[in-house]
Structure formats: structure tokens, C-alpha cells
Length: 145
Image (cartoon, rainbow, N blue to C red):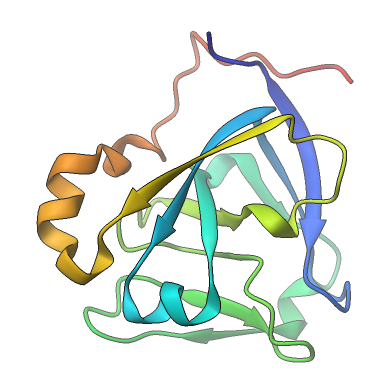
């Protein structure tokens, strides 16, 4: 059973980067073992870009790091260094939200799946991660609370 969409708020440690994201109350998050994700302990869920909104003047506090194919855009706060979201290589049309950066109280359940980023191509083909940024408007309903 898929949960309805709810507006979640979140951001970085120093709160200079703030955002809102429409996502279910129950999400599937990905724990990746690529060189970047494993070093920073990132576990993220992916949403379509249309469901993510950067708030206020947050963009002035962001900087971006890329490597390898330069498809992923690893954004982080210039002040505190936290990557609260980024554009993932697996879903360049989506946003990867670090689930621990979501403000408490709106995520009811997080299922963590493994993504073998050290063997990116084979994991991408077998994991189903590529469908995470696709809009499913018939099933999704924006929650009112």
C-alpha cells in the first residue's frame, strides 16, 4: 500500500539551507557504497524534481561537487558542509533527499535498500532505482496535513 504525499521540510545543520519536498510518509531510501556516499554515510530517498522546492535564499549557501561522469551534482552547505539533497547520477531528473535531514515528525517509515555504487552499472540495471524520479500522478495524492 502506497502512502499519500505529504509536505516534508528539512535542510542542513546550520539551517541556512532549507527546503520542502512532497513525498510519501513511508519512503524507500538508498544506502550506497560508492566512494562519496560511503565516506559521508549518506542514505537518501529520491523524488521527482517537481516535488522539491528550495526555500528563501538557500541557494546562496550551496556549492556543488562533481566527479567521475559529472552527472551527479553533490550540493552541500558552504557553512556547515551538510549534503541535505543533491541531483543523483541514477536519476538526474530527480532530487536525492538525505532522509536524516528531514525535520522530525513527518516520515513514518523508512525502508533502507542497498545500492552497490562500487559496481554502479550492474546495480543500476538490477535495482529499479531509475524509476524513483518518475511522476505517478494517478497514485499520488497530496496530503492536507
